[in-house]
Length: 238
Image 1 (tube, rainbow, N blue to C red):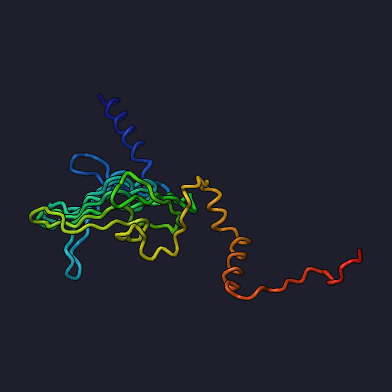
Image 2: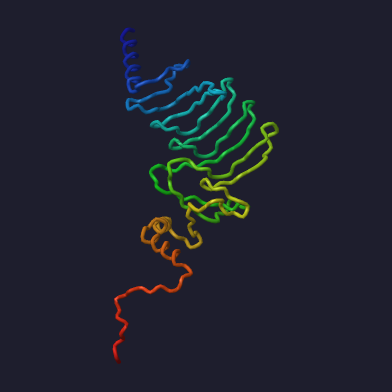
């Protein structure tokens, strides 16, 4: 019997020995784990106290290498769910739901996180009247944060009716005619010609091509410019 107890203690200490810090829940689970590298791992419960008029809350979910991953739920101190969020690479990704402190659904948001390993990403632009139809594709730079992407719904939290909707394409609001409000910094790809992404990215970032475009823009509408070619202007006699 003593041997069995000693064996159990050895297994327990060996299992907990991989964590720099942790807490034990009332159910005996290990929570709020910090590994030997100081990174948050596994299931966490975080409590935030009332502060300067803002109500406190409790949130729970999973960490992977110090980044939030998957579903995270937020509750009021009274135990009412006030948010249901989804994360990828530590950033909001997919559908998010937010509720009032009485439990009524207030809004649904749609976000997209970009893989930190990619400098750029490409996303489709769908027809507002036919969500199954792709009308364009855009290339966006990865600035290291999540972007509004997809349809947003605003509800009457009492009756559950949809009061308003918005559609975003990587932080740009898509207006009624299908165009994007303030889309100067996203680059469209001509999908009708079947151009490859790599070619579009090259043209969007190639310094030589950008210089040519800048030159053409500066001299647009001007008289023909003489360019020195080395010719003397004297034609040989026949």
